[in-house]
Length: 146
Image (cartoon, rainbow, N blue to C red; front, top):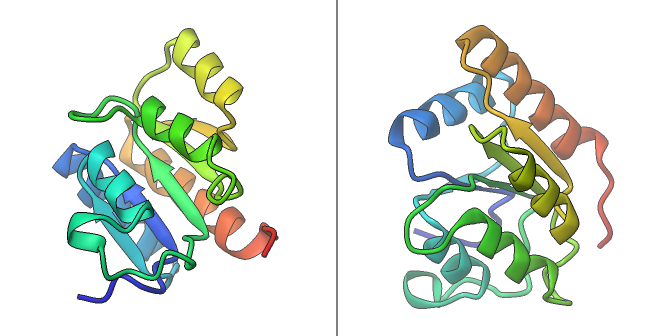
């Protein structure tokens, strides 16, 4: 598989949440190339072209990183901190997509440079609507630096 030209990197360790989110993005009409990664360590490997992703072009950055917080190996907060302190990667928009409503998590993510913090709606209709709007904004309306 070629890991180049990926536009959305989606990192979530919960297979049910991942399936639902990917379905919502597709149902929302987004045809962007998406890769689903299962934990923070895999996300860092992808972004830094290590291990399985060693052949990926390091100069190609995703247009969006959707990041869960509570994951094994490396947490979403650790991934966010690493990205936003890296001069090469810090302009990648990072949207936290998590079930955590805890105020310390929200505050920490914004202090580290998260572009948005979205709590996963429990009700599936609201979830689909939120994901569709998220995709439309970040993929169509947002104008990132080159």
